[in-house]
Image (cartoon, rainbow, N blue to C red; front, side, top):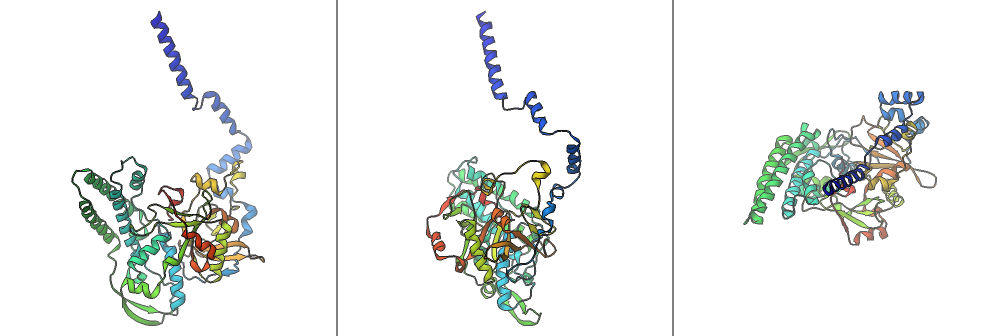
Length: 466
């Protein structure tokens, strides 16, 4: 009898525990309550029929805002032909190099369609990123595979996204060539297949390096030598997809009317020195990250393109101070590297970014209440795309009403290859801006001298622009 009582008590306890753990699920009673969220009325059925057979954005278009579009700007940088990154994540490179090409065109009276070769810089970007990954695997060889940093490295061995620091480090190290000296290929315009091959091989190599390091007697020199052998294979893959980068080339310079000025032989470094001799130490990265304290400088580990280069380092500022610097630069006819969460409230046909473009709340009968800080902290929003900030429209008090960026999606996209954004959208979805030293107030510039706060590579702000 005692045994039966014990078994009964044990069963009761198990049942009670099971009930506790089951409380997180949806019971039949709870499901009945949940289903009341949708009332099968004639109005609901009509709305459901519309939504299931149409694009949500078309149904959510805010008709009251349709005619709000205005293409007038009080201040504008005179940019030239729009570039096209095609099906690649190289917006950061196109944007950075568009800033450089605008200066070269203005200084040397070059044709409007002059471009630096993006594929040349991209070749070295991919080789350097491969080295960054392999060396990081060597550096973290004593950490377990379950360590968050090691996991992050294997999840992100290489990619075609990036940011302005990559442009600066790559141009400083490898120089530049004109588009004619190394033209685009199918793999540079459509990077996904090659990127998948590189990722697969690098992950294999990463495991091999960790296995080597775990063996007794393996020296750092042996790991380094094996890494170089691995990079030979990466170089081969890149050369087969892109062709080899030129070490010397002949280029005929023409003026804006197409008249030949001179034909000259260059190296990538001599070409850079003549046509883009920028001191990148005078370019500063500004961020609006409301999840962190303003007036502090932050750096993100492994957020770089070159192992011996620089991580993304930024000063976090309120939006009004960032806008003031941007206005000063535009007024001086200097375009800037700019990045934002481009997919939010974008009317692609018009090339118009306005938080009032779509009324999702009215369509679904619900409210969306998160502010910028909440969206960033929950990964609902972040910097996703880089473009060239080139215009602002100021009111009679000098306050911005709207902005314009030159995009790299081709001349037929958006508004003549550009995107126009309201100042309200700018404040909500703009994140990064690269400003030259002369447009930064001296007291703000001094803030860069403070001790840097290092953030982990999985930080929400790490996501590279594509």
